[in-house]
Length: 409
Image (cartoon, rainbow, N blue to C red; front, side, top):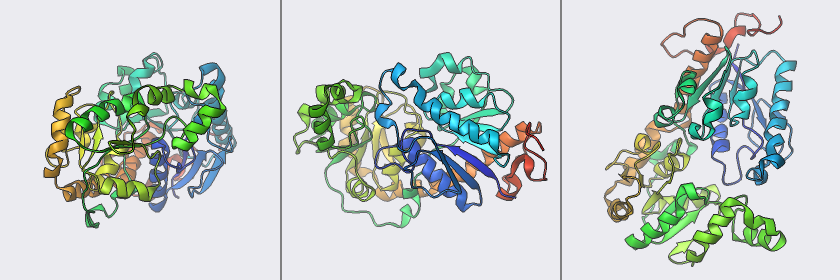
């Protein structure tokens, strides 16, 4: 009997997303890889998701990302409404062996009260919800995992006690990366990701100018994918300018975007992103926080683009300094600029080879199967074996015909 996993992507963006959407891209990558390995996936998402899955459950017809940074009293019910749909589904059926949850705070807070094994992936800095995580009582069936070793090291002790380890993120771009020809390198530098203060685009502008490199800022501003959408929103609605990311863009970024030294093309499709990064001198990550996962970093490596950034968060785990990129101490803009000038010494093929070895979807899926096994074994009250087992023996507590733990026969 195959393993059935309810993959809870949340209510914010479709899976896969149309442009920006780090978590949703992770869910899409993992779901596809798991199904290719024989796992049955029930995807909890929004109605306009297009990812193939064995089943799909939804509450909202469309993603709710545009509301994400609105005042709490206006949006607090969105994640809960989605989660209520998930819980209703779990109550009415007994074929789900495990829930793999990706919904910040609301996911673990509600799943902790259920009798089904659940794994919650921490995609964020757990310190920003310290009041919740330091008091988390997950019950007998809830476990968590991180997306980097550094992320878990910074987590509250109570949360670490529920951890079954970390799993680095993956990208489909890593499949076959070692065999793809490297495009001719040009002089531009790319910052890939949402334009927001913690990503450090304001730092990137200064560093690229110091290195004399044209800078491309590839990503959305809040819910707006490009300049046309942003300008339209600002003309139509005065409140659009109060969005924190829009305010940051208008106050600190927009004046530097001249189409020559600094360019903002907005969110890019896959082909545009591949061309932009593949031909770039480097991908720049002057992050202002301890980035936990680093999807954009591994995408850059898979596209044979050296990574230049600060030595913080997950970057030292993803980047081999001197071989696949160059790292500077946080805040050292002069060193970042020097690293940009030295980026040509990094062999782009080494970046692609490392991505193909470490960051493919199958590598990530195999690691998650190990964690699923740990969670299921714990729910049964037994210690997991050390070896990696086939999917057919990971079918959880119902493999022998017994009901799931705590569920009626």
